[in-house]
Image 1 (cartoon, rainbow, N blue to C red):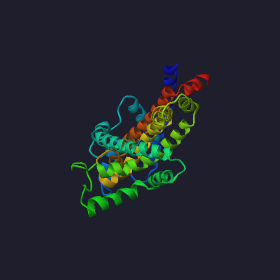
Image 2 (image 1 turned 60 degrees about the vertical axis):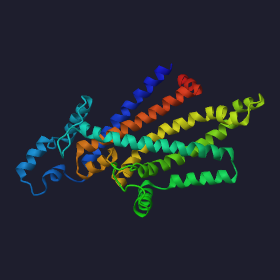
Image 3 (image 1 turned 120 degrees about the vertical axis):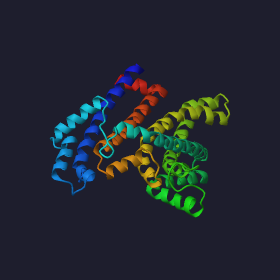
Image 4 (image 1 turned 90 degrees about the horizontal axis):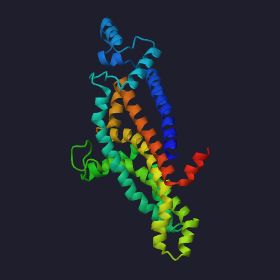
Length: 311
């Protein structure tokens, strides 16, 4: 039964990726600007412009270009960069490790902050500690990355001189980008952890455990934590896509040489194949994160499996 649900989820993800690829392709071709002008300049000879346009298949109807693009994707060919003529997959592969490193450190930092904060707020629900914890999480959700990043840079890099301003070559260079990216995630997870813990602590399972004489510490950290883990883990998996989306801004602010910065550079240079490849990969990871969240929820919660099987 579980294997059938997994296959159904995977089958649902395929049309989503196709829709993303289609939307990105046509939106890029609607954006003002000509890649031929970006490559040759506006003063290039008409013959050179025509030859390059033919080599890039830009002289073909847009529907033929689209079908050619989909055919290449099906055969594992994502095209070549218009700037340096290297394969798109090779350009992306060079930047993925930096983005993965930043995302993992940011998510680890978010978990370290969110779980104790959520537990503390739930344990003191309705009191000043709860209000203070949720106030901090509200601030974390409200502060945008494009503002928090420069403020952290001004304070810790420019004024105090404790950390590097940008790049990833110096020790400690990942600290400020990770804090910038992990703050909003920590805020979301802490609020989810609080709500899940409060719901779990008032459930029949914890009341039964308390009736059998279990200590409050065991009830909170074993019985209630087990029940609260399902929505928290699901939310954590869902937020992976949001973290990857946030890397575009964060990497640009801190000049972090990852996939997000590569996407911005490709957009500025009108490098259509590279932009399509970057956005398609980010979308694929986002879909995979949602798929993982669904499967984790099905695996951890038998009630969802029964509901899905009935449908």
